[in-house]
Image (tube, rainbow, N blue to C red; front, side, top):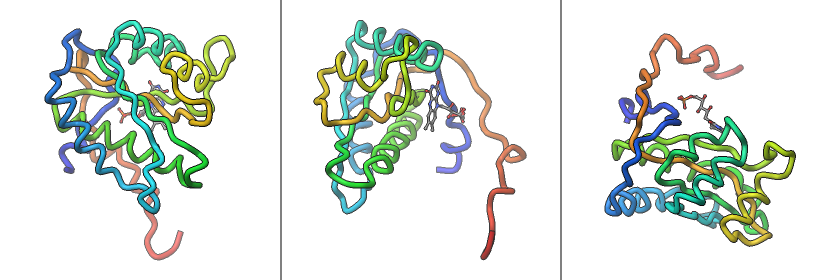
Length: 172
Ligand SMILES: Cc1cc2nc3c(=O)[nH]c(=O)nc-3n(C[C@H](O)[C@H](O)[C@H](O)COP(=O)(O)O)c2cc1C
């Protein structure tokens, strides 16, 4: 686990290769174990491999969403705010578990933020994504995780860079 965490980096350039269906199913199996408050599981996952849709999603936020433009796969996480008051936590947890599962399967990934973000021409990214993927109006899109075989190398996190100063013992 520590090796996985130290070597996970945000990957924004992907090879053109599709991800094997078996791998996608394994990833989803792991991801669906995600914990959620009171086990409500307020999220829905939209698995996107349609290249045209990926390209449109990648154009939502300019540079901030460029990882999606060349990814063979994205998982879009939407949640129902009416289901629970901790839907943001639940949607965030499943988002990072997608990234960790991807890493464990030899895949790279990048989180693209949707909630509270605007498109390059000032519209809500939430609405933009909902239109492309037919997501019901009463859901909120938290994030889109771009996934694929890495086409860039990034060094692992180094021990010296870890913010140990943010850790407090017994009091602040
Ligand atoms: C809540 C959240 C939102 C993020 N939003 C974006 C984003 O919109 N676009 C992007 O390219 N990366 C995004 N990232 C990735 C961060 O930039 C990245 O995790 C951070 O710079 C640390 O780098 P590392 O993931 O390589 O360790 C986001 C990450 C998180 C956790």
